Image (tube, rainbow, N blue to C red):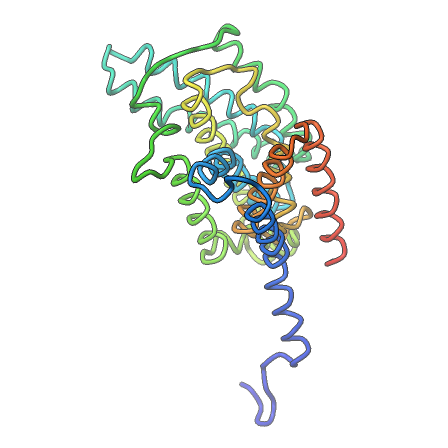
Length: 331
């Protein structure tokens, strides 16, 4: 019972500090994105057109989808280096299903092509999680195994051959435009909205942050830490599988050597720039979306001015360095 004359409200200074910590992770990326947008609106020809908007959004959609899963993994204090390889595996499985449909049923082949590759990638994600939780292997090493072997698995499944196809039903996931909006952008926004809600409004989201903040304390509090970590690696695998389907649908081909190449770096960069703590315990899905958009817009800005893509990679690395430095200052 609260004694008379005492209050449970936080002191004003503490309350201000808490509000500052709550708003600051999104404020910086949002300001940076607005400044980039205004700069391009003023100085880049044809920037304020529907075509330019669609180009930037479609190029960033798969990065955001993968980065959302990466955000959850990093929030638990881990990392997932295998996302690009899982995209390649998913991209290798899908054409095999609808080019050679079971029982000769084309509709069944398409249905399986949308689901089985994603589930396969999810199972590989659970494999990563089991290495981390059951065998106590460091996440960097555990996911490095599939980073190396995953693309090889995809190449073995396809005999190292480029799989080309022309299937309008499957291609809709990467090329469809309901109401003029790229379908992959709708998927991206749906994934962001879903997991932003999961992190901020569900018990599972609280568990993810608690595990990343202090795993030992979370375990003592009764949180099933191993199951939470297993789940986030599984989710990361599922989202990687989905991104793999989008990439091969856009290209109407599946190349195990190229699908998802360097995606793990892009995803980690989006998470870092978006304000999620790389040490775990704090995550913002909306920040990850902003981080990916910032990186994409910077790349677009440089390319629009004739700067080589190789230089854009150096700029991206510098941005990540600045983001990590800012995170250290916050701690």
